[in-house]
Length: 124
Image (cartoon, rainbow, N blue to C red):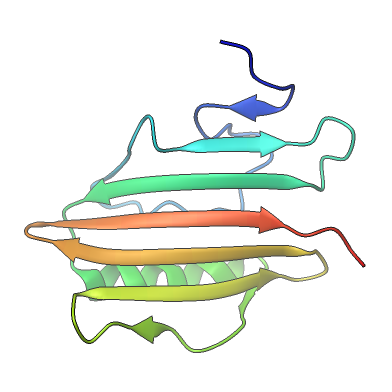
């Protein structure tokens, strides 16, 4: 299968150190995770990281609210909490860059699922 230069079917260690992965019982879901770093401009990167694990939703939320600012992200707005299902959505932007990180944390039975989407918008 052909893929463009800079595309990965997993998250490469180089270039994505600022996307925190919870250290407690989470695994990356293969087939749903990918990353792209523009070979011409490495400042342009896109990623989708899907994790699943056994944890409390509130503990996972606290982890991201602590670690994302430590990695240079700041919240764009308050977390959105669904009233219908156990789910929280976080909205962050990278300091000094046109990158946005959206984090969905949800509970399904005994597991907590996390989906992180990193997108880059070119400056206008």
